[in-house]
Length: 118
Image (tube, rainbow, N blue to C red; front, top):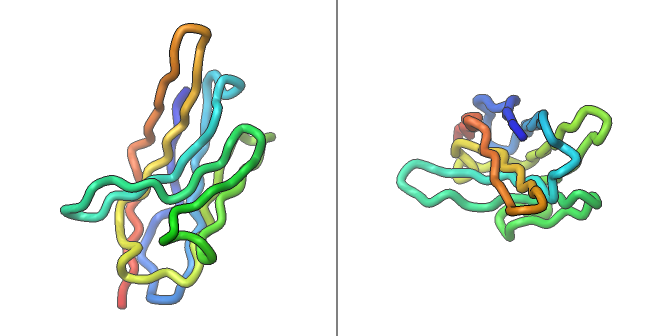
């Protein structure tokens, strides 16, 4: 499985962005897809997750502002981010968790930069 993110950019405080994560390869084997972010000098943190059954979950920092969704036809997961704050500034990564009969794997994208100006 390969994933690639898009949609990052510069946005003002209170603005919105929609990130996309396109998956390819053995997409049928994906168990869930996650959005992570990493700000300078900080650890990478989980922002949102969507399971193969479409069940979303969010970090406390994302609840009420971010929405994760998917388009199964195009194997794309989205992260709609509203009411953005400067502290949301980070590189956002998509991660696909997928499995074979033998083991579980992770596939990370290269990341997309989100910058929120105050």
